[in-house]
Length: 422
Image (cartoon, rainbow, N blue to C red; front, top):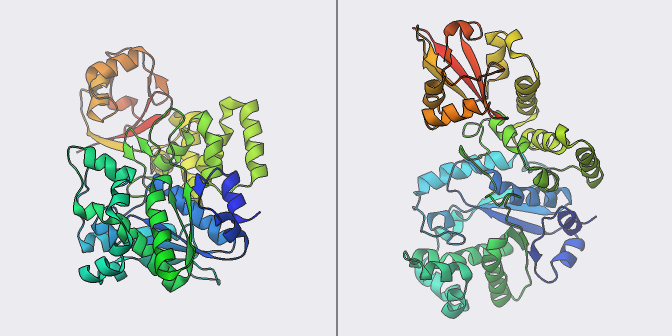
């Protein structure tokens, strides 16, 4: 199977320019994906283009990861309703270094004729003079065509409008493609489907300036089966950096995938073969309560992003929380197994804690009334004991070794509450 076939059966091809499939089947080529350095970490929404680059390398092609150190100073208006705050060059550089470390989990930057390269468009965009840019690039684009772009039209019609800064973004990304074509013989750009206009602008610039043919391939934008934005939870964005999103929380994100999404995500976000995924799908249909697809998904993605040990620890913590006997474990064992489980510290109170107030104080509920409703509906467990009385008080004597409460809200949300003694 060639790269296009690999991406297609996984559902990763939303659209491609004419001739892209033939170009990929003829032999190794160089392709790139751009990453926006607005933060020091990528998030799970970035995984789809990362996987596309990884599949490229596995099929013998040369992947380029472009960090937008230059365009990151401007901001892409695609999919945005307001202009983003501009970053300093120092912030962009620090963020780019964090992104490279995360990409190294997926791409081999060290070995082979098709080793991956990380490039930063600040290297050429910050050296570009305004007059040169308008003469050599701007003259190849009509304002009419730029105004017709959907992302620009939406912003023009909005109350905020669009600045000249963001209006110029398409030209800058097109110039990136031209530079990569000249320096690395790059003939393929990939990205989300919202990048189609930017990609085709680059192809057109290469055709006009170099008389050469380049290609584009765009990936689907993901929403969950429930219609929610992918990669967002009640706690916020799910990051690839373990300091921003702990491996246990990362594992839980995938484990909690909707049954309707789990198999699709196995195709999107793992390197498992079609036969293996079909096997998991059959097992999931036969025994949906065992959540085979979600468990495999959580294990594989966590292992790829955070390593074997982190995946093993997250899986062990999950198994202990949902099927083990917590009361038989020592406080030390719990702290070790649940090192990445969200935790809160409360000061020791001789009179104990009213549970409704404790749930609110540690952030599991937004108010005492919500805590009361949860308890009445049977949705709160303390050290595996379902609490039935909303007037319940906890004492330090009920804590594991007088130190820990493991509180579960609903089916899956757990919090480790540690008692701090003076």
